[in-house]
Length: 295
Image (cartoon, rainbow, N blue to C red; front, side):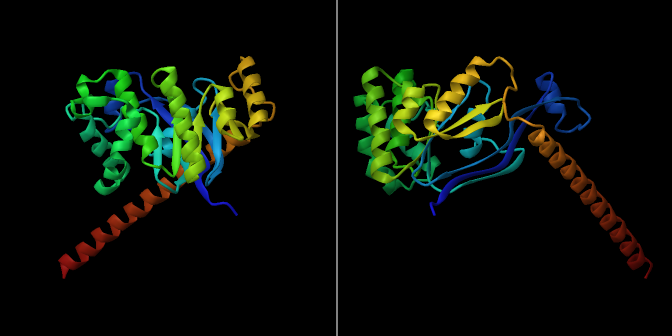
């Protein structure tokens, strides 16, 4: 049986939408501040096996980036559980974690340490990263002197050269010119074939997805619309793009929504019970203290 390296179990992500930043700040101290809720991810369950390459499709706002952020630990689910087993190379925001005052070389070590590598491990791939990024003598110049393209190439190079066990790609293959893009595609293919890297690939390009993946997951309005063969997934994705109805899904029932509501009710009950227990303990401690004082 294949080892599962990514698991999402009944995961939901609900954002609190406040009228302005002031209300958002006050809500930290005052729970009566009103807000609206947006369900970005609605009770999603799927897993990815070691060495598997999976494409995720969906129109803007379907929840693709939210899922990736939760898998990489940038944000957390409101409900449900996520388990990730392996070193992750995330091609999301390629320049995140960089310090503009550090040189390119220093940023390689900074980002490597943020990923969890030791200095000897970074040294082992340092020259490979520099060669792949094609920044030349700028590698020892402050990052603030780099163009946006140079920064992105360096960020991409770091993530693909550290030999990640899990590679997460969010439309990152548009980095640089067409020659560099081809090099990026070739590099991803190499680490998949040579190291058995697991790939989670978010894209709008169905042709690129077919080049890497045999399985596809289609999202719509925070739900899994389809999960299976890549060709079938592309058909579902193309059909979903034609449908204007926000919640279109020929198989949708109210099951998912009912499960979230039930979970929310259960969480509220647990919170009430916990408060009652705490109050009871406080009262008991007060009685005990009074008894001790009288003696």
